[in-house]
Length: 439
Image (cartoon, rainbow, N blue to C red; front, side):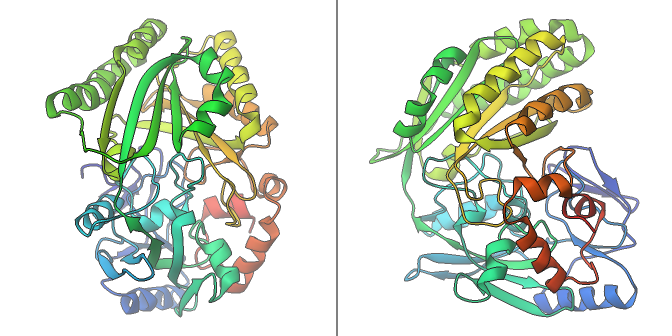
């Protein structure tokens, strides 16, 4: 079924192929009223309820053996308010469709992640983010939410209305209710100039504070087994537009980043000894380039090579030390890592369980090609991340539980108390939430 999660003979699977579940039944509501009725009916039948998005989470956050709510009919823009500069969109709308619709209206989100297959509610509920000096995650751009709670009632919240729900529900993990609509802050569409260039890892680490301070959006990819990185700086631009040329873009984005990369992954999986050599070649394959375009064409890129991923947010000042430890661990371990390590940043925000809640953060993401055993690498990386008080991305592989989170998040108790109030019977419970929030 393309890039979305697939259902075959009653089994739901996620995009990365890491999770499967067999729901008792599936519902695709066409309205908020139908969704409310489905939640009430589930309660009568004693079943739990989970809404899924596109299945882009690597954790079992959306898995259920109860009622599975599919979002494909709850899509589209409800309202654009040009005075308030907001757009209200149905929860099942894919980010790709939102971005394209906004661009046609001359509008844009301020910041976004690098994948746009996800639904808006799936992306925000798990804390999906890009990179930014001042601009934070997609959820931090939310100005209002509508959600169906456990008793089937519809609750709206914002900074003014039900503010305690708003504080938590922007990244609600599906634990507080089912989000049906989201109001985002938008701005007039603008241009970004992207500058991509290789740089030695040592230089990036030595100059990290400057690179971060001098760019609105800075990120880099480090290729394990090499001292090489590819850096990307995105900054607002007065223009003119200068998109990536079609042929060159196809070679760099499709052929090198997806095609050749896919083949390299297959070779590396079959013959792990070849990985360091492949890494040296891939880390030098991309040359420097610069282009200027509207935000979603610069921030996002296609991801056709399937993988498993772990990502942790560490305090921004702990980043260089974290990476040096990660590099030493890989060199020492005999592991063969064929996927680059991705590093991004976010400013502190005020969302209860946001990975950047209350602290300026740097994100370090480790990936393994789908079908390659990732446990040894992820376990060793996780040991380093947690030693720096890391907070794992809610939708990516991790082994943390409620006890860990109660220490990692100063406002953890605030979230669980709200959950007790909104979902006392645990209608939205599943194994993942039982682990990360407690029962």
